[in-house]
Amino acid sequence: MIKIIRTSKAIERKVADTYSVFVMLSKKDSDNLSMCLSKAKNHKEIALNTKSDRIYYIIKGKVKIKAEGREFEAIKNDLIFISANTKYEFGGTFEAVQVLSPPFDLANEPLDINGNPKKP
Image (tube, rainbow, N blue to C red; front, side, top):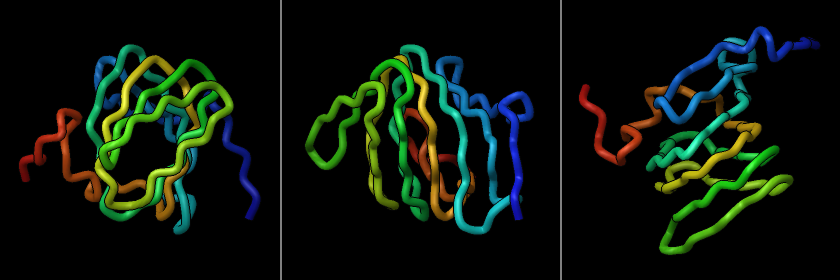
């Protein structure tokens, strides 16, 4: 299969007033991965995905990440790899291409953006 997905057809998922992801490829399209464009403005979040490895490719701005007792800063053209089941904090003003494998599933995100367990 070959598929062209135009950014104008991306589905926006507003995570917070300061952060949106524009889904371009989802588990409906592929059993192996999902892809979205992320746009953040002065955003802060604590994240954990229990099943998916996650890649951020920074296309604009910068993002600060804290994980496993270390701090990182990524800028344009940097790639960030976060393995499944890694809790991390991230924040900043940036745009990124985000790829998850296996595909994103909200059920695998047990925390809200403040790092608290989601209510069932």
